[in-house]
Image (cartoon, rainbow, N blue to C red; front, side, top):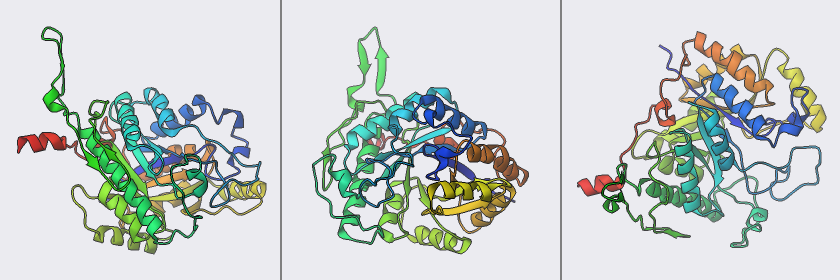
Length: 392
């Protein structure tokens, strides 16, 4: 019996190909409008996808590993992902919204209340894609710390361990802040004049290597209790794996073959973890359709180079992709975060061709079965840790 897949899409401007904005189906004047993003997210919801992620960073896109390049023929600039997700939430009803927020130069308190607010605005459909920032040019925007030149190979260095350790602390602080209001903290009783039960509002008193947070949060407990935390694996080495294993609900991995997918899944499963099992999603850049190869070749010609990515690049039909996804599922992959090569074309191919192909194979839902992102992923809603502590 086929186990249904989880399916998400990663949205980034006009698509993941750097020349996607020159695709005839794209109106580049729309890229920085809410209308453009609303069309993409509602299309993803039309396909009953689990969630969308929204890319973000603390520097302009660049072909260089660290610092701006001189190119003027590629998209540069983004909208703030958390703010954008909050704008999109009222336009959707079931799909999860998972913006990217960086931990390296941002305050965990601010990120925590931003994601909690998104969960309230979306009625329980928020997530967070945690990202670290190793780039020296990004550090220069803030002036609080100095970083060495970035090694694009991402070796296991003290810097890498420090950045991911800091990210783990940021997630832990956020999770404690989300728990700092118990579910029934708000009384809102007009006759007695009691809005909250002060005994159910908790200091978190978190202290890490680089920051401390006393709490409590200024935002009541999110509808999901704990919004979904997701992390992209960097380089298949142990240090980046430790962050999702210790802190996340979903890890995105980037295998380039079934054999590699099985090996990565095995390494992750071998690491000790408490609580619910970590869900493993594979990232794939996809160009879908009978003319997919020709479309990609045309975009490559516009860009002046063959497109490559950290993730595998798939070019083919929806049925061929459906077969690949099910094959990798048998290797230990539970879900996929697909990166459309160009939108709207490849996004619509996912929702209108791939989804039906998976459904014919009994591998994807025919309707949304839950109202929250945790529910779609089959994850229970946790109690506040402080409520549990009080009960003991």
